[in-house]
Length: 196
Image 1 (cartoon, rainbow, N blue to C red):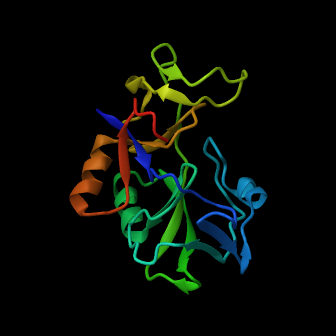
Image 2: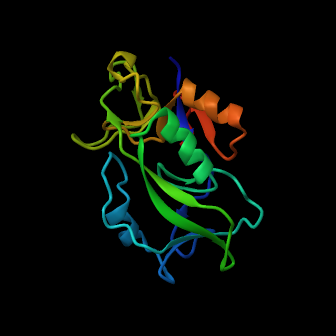
Image 3: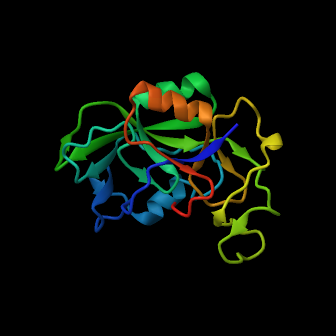
């Protein structure tokens, strides 16, 4: 099976009020500290304190993609993309509701932050190429990620590799299903790509 980095590949990210894309909670800006407490930067963690009213404000009026934005490795996905992922891999993610606004006006459609819940200890450390040397116990960024596929459960189509800082990894089956469905905004890159 072939695997890919899966996510939104862009120079922009959802973050603070000074960025092009901002997160807003109950009318106020979602600050980095607030976000860090709720969206784990690495690893998989169920979030039980998500607010009832979370809004992503975007500068893209006409962007009607199924994956319009992302924060770190937690993409925002449409209801259509959520259903497709759930059909192939029902336990892949926790879906946290968000509204997308352009200049204060909601964009049609239901959107979710996909909080990936499956983590697999499958990095082939001998063949992967790390970027620098992180302190012991820290998550690693790789120039080239090689997976030991014997450790990946066949039922997993989206997951995060243990101790690696990267986009989610998806199976070729999920990639093909997304491409064949006409879903937009998703990116797939080879594991040896240096783009995050």
